[in-house]
Image 1 (spheres, one colour):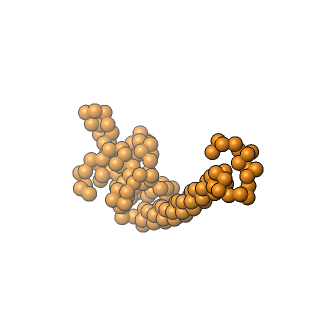
Image 2 (cartoon, one colour; image 1 turned 180 degrees about the vertical axis):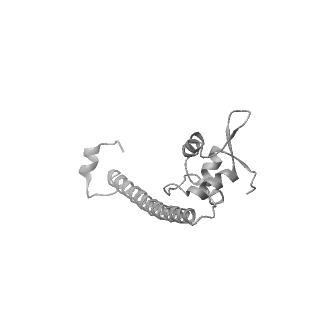
Image 3 (cartoon, rainbow, N blue to C red; image 1 turned 90 degrees about the vertical axis):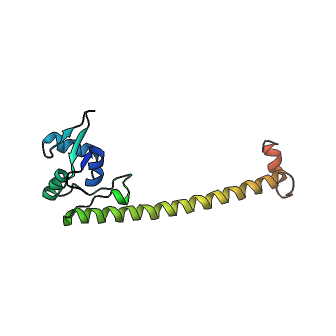
Length: 141
């Protein structure tokens, strides 16, 4: 990252692992200097952002949705490294939970398919055990 690199509010938010509204609040409070593009966008230098983060540390650690590993903030302070470690551990736990939920959904879909096939067999008369079900449901299935 070049010291003179200019960042948009959203780019700065990803680098700092905070929301864009937090970056705007820091700008509005005067904590971070900014310039304005010809289109009216607020621009921050990477040097100003990193200087602020090194002096004040990160806010409460939280996961930044949509930030890839390449966009994860890299700051040399120990507190930010710890916040990044906490965020990565939370992402790992979330990934494991999602995998378990997907497996459960697949299992339930297989069960549902099996139950539908059994019900159709019963209603088609191929199964003699529950002819009363066929009469009760009629020929709707």
